[in-house]
Image (cartoon, rainbow, N blue to C red; front, top):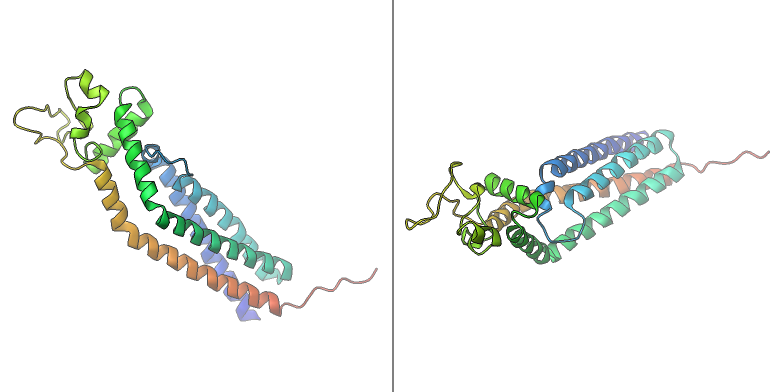
Length: 235
């Protein structure tokens, strides 16, 4: 029983640390990536919001798990186990949804980029986010710089491109020599390559968290089964 108690308390601490990590990553993503995510045309909740909500819930329930193990309260242990099952199912559902609807997510981001190009100069928030994206990823347009040439903004300025498309901050006017001073790749391809390159790390982390939750569920159920029922003294 002592081993079970210490194991569940250790698991709760690790689970709390995982929740704190999700909360920190969510805050970082909200601050650093919020503008980029605003470019997507998808109406589904953003990853930062999901991470913030999940991280907060995990931190709170991890304290409950540690308290239930320390007090050997059967009801709390069962509740904690049920919460772990719910989080595991929610995580699996979210992961499968992202996998099954990844084409829709990609299509929404592509449409959002095209809309941001079309609204450039009118929607300052999206314009700033698009400029930041092009500078950070060294990209230009959706698939190439040619996407800019047919936009209302470019047509007003004689088929120009924003400075964020240029390798040199002084500008890169398009001429007969071509577009050697521009970032050669489109932003959609750069983002897709980044996501694909980090998919293995994300999948590994998700699998590790799922295994961790299964361990916690087993520990909580075993301890709840061994804790004697509390008998209420007669009045």
